[in-house]
Image 1: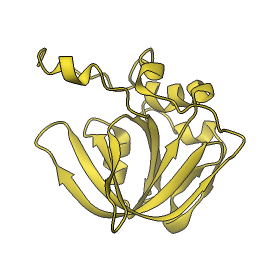
Image 2: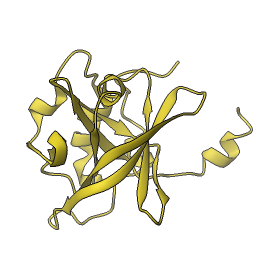
Image 3: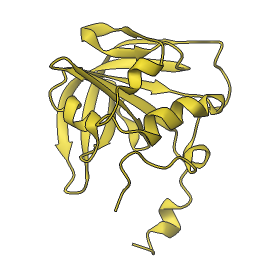
Image 4: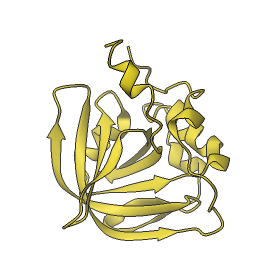
Length: 163
């Protein structure tokens, strides 16, 4: 693994907050594994940790919302990355609204989209991929600064530490 870190250590991906709602439960978490994965049709994949409360809610969700944050929104990233939904409803601390299909949309995110879950992909590791078909999106021009990236979030202690 240490050898691969010579490659992965150079990466500095955007960070996202992913929210899910299903069966009367709602959840959200900070995600570093996500990317557009198709051009035609447009598809986007987010990878959720199986240890995470958001993953357990997302398994039954028809849609997920994916949010971009700016560097100035570090406190929002810390809320979704540093606390666990097993103990509290993180969404009660933020301004949010209902989006397409009942998705939870963070009103203060720099940009966001709601995607219909097309498929789930098990990778044989500790994350499961959710491939999304975007159906609704928006942005807040007031938050147009540099996006929050991995190096900006390194000081956040994970709500569910990785062993």
